[in-house]
Length: 311
Ligand code: UDP
Image (cartoon, rainbow, N blue to C red; front, side, top):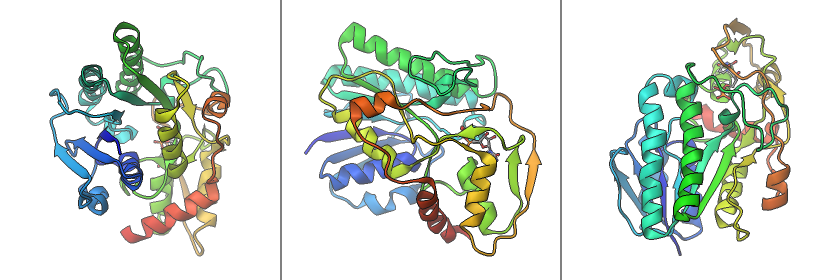
């Protein structure tokens, strides 16, 4: 049994990770200030005797003797992180420093959940980890993108300067149960709109692409990365192999909801919205040795079932 600290916002990925770690009989401590998350996501684990929830101001240092730290602290949906941009970049950087100091002090392993956003609006396709990206440093997405890029720098420097045992993963678009219905991201928006027969809000032409990954696949890969014994620390893309346009996503979702009568309405594309996103996942395959198990339709079916409780 390990003692594991998970930082985050009582959010979507966080709730699945905590549940999985508890199922593996670890002791889990969570820190959160409930900025974008909701306590709903922790009701089913809060009574577990191996789970401790700490309401904590993330800008303040935290001390605990732990074996591993998963650093998830940062709102990830564009509409949320752009509402409080200063808080977003502060959270990324200050919290990473606090957690890296803790990891250094107690000799814990620490995993950073970075993002495909570090590639910005990529000019290289598909994106390999060695691609340095095309990020606007002063745009409305920059608070998130640059915060995550700076955090990767901090992780590498703590490793080089102090020998901290780090891991960095770059997460691509992930979806599944426990997403907030008003999260604002494309999968939750389209499903909620389709379930209630409202117009589907397509930003731009709908030809922009993303690679979607089901939450269970991400969690397996994340834990595998933390536990890899090869001293493999480098940023690794975590994603499924397929690339979909937003139009294809809308078609797949409406097809899975019998009797749906939604129309697609077109809205302006948000600034700096990446046009094409698809990662090269060779490194993940080579180092972590697994394939995604849940394909888009199956994952969307599970997610649609979950969202039915909100209508
Ligand atoms: N998007 C859309 N309609 C929505 C929400 C998002 O067309 O109601 C588009 C958005 O412009 C982007 C893609 O879907 O091109 C994915 O958006 P999301 O916010 O889910 O993730 P991110 O842009 O961070 O990859």
